[in-house]
Amino acid sequence: MDLDIYCGPAPTPDILWSAWNFDPPLLAGVAAIFLLLVISAKSRRQRLAAWTSLVLMLLAFVSPLCALASALFSARVAHHVVLVTLLAPAIILAMPAETLRRPQLPAQLSFITHTVLMWVWHAPGPYLFALGSPAAYWLMELSLIGSALWLWMDILSPRRSAGAAIGLLLGTTIQMGMLGALLTFSREPLFASHMDSTHAFGLSPLADQQLAGLLMWVPAALPYLAAALLRLRSVFSGRSFDSKAPR
Image 1 (cartoon, helix red, strand yellow):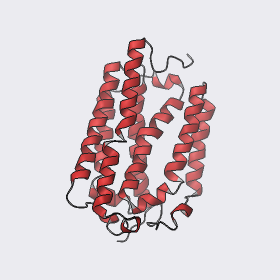
Image 2 (cartoon, rainbow, N blue to C red):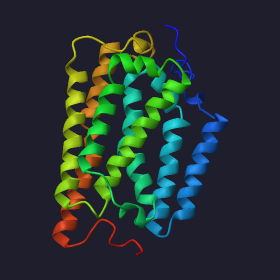
Image 3 (cartoon, rainbow, N blue to C red):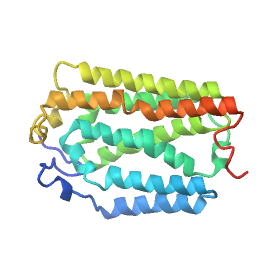
Image 4 (cartoon, one colour):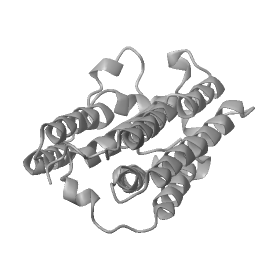
């Protein structure tokens, strides 16, 4: 299959750990985002979140995980889980507290947008399109990250009620669980780009897809459930998420 995947062709296990991505435009973009977050940070928590964002960006796009995602759909799902459940909230927590207090659109819009994009980009046709060129790849990645940032901004905003924030968190957990279940219980492999690349890692295409579904179903839910518990705790303790942030 003639693909032009941004992270390169599917590696084999013996070369995986040498498959780092040192693309200069990518490194420049990561550095720029990190510097913006660090410069704008006003608290220790925000600086920690900025450094966490840097580590997660390097993990997702520079480390061999980027190349492994060319071989395994499960690695692609793990990559996306890092982006939407860890990187997105880390970036939001690194931003100035004033950003979260700005007027916002109805919370349902961020949830619907993120849900639609998650389902679209993990459908066989759009997923194959995303691997056809670097431009298509970055359309997938940036739209997923952008919608996740919007969703987490709604979740973490003090302008949102606890009920609305917890509803967004539980709703996202459910929709990702449903998508994961569909992938897990599918009786045949759906992703043509991984039909020949999984065997080197000891997985059939179907087993790889089922592993991807389990990752989306269970581990991906944990950050949302943890955030929901923290929001509940903040309600019972009478504090907001950003009560320690500078005013």
